[in-house]
Amino acid sequence: MDIQLKRGLLDVCVLAAIKNEDSYGYKIIKDLKPYVELSESTLYTILKRLEAASMLTVRTAEHDGRLRKYYHITETGHRRLEEFKSEWKEIISIYQFVTKGDGVC
Image (cartoon, rainbow, N blue to C red; front, side, top):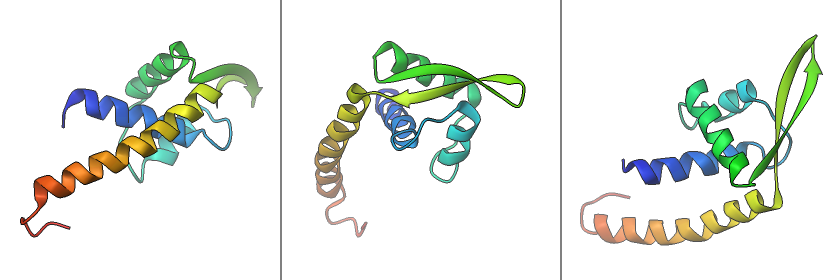
């Protein structure tokens, strides 16, 4: 898969994982596991990139005597998710064109 496409898809997956409630690294990985395999190092690179792009914010809170970072999606992050949904319709259309006549669903 094209690295830029995969990068964009992973960014959107992480945003989707926190769109309804704040979350932390381990839980994000666990929530995404049925859909995509993601290492901790890859996740934290994505989280830093999304924070730099103002798509999420980070807060630290104590949990069981340890500090844990919680990630919160911003309005910019929500807009990115909506943009992705529109873009995906075009990607599906392109896929259907490319596989036309291949007997692929």
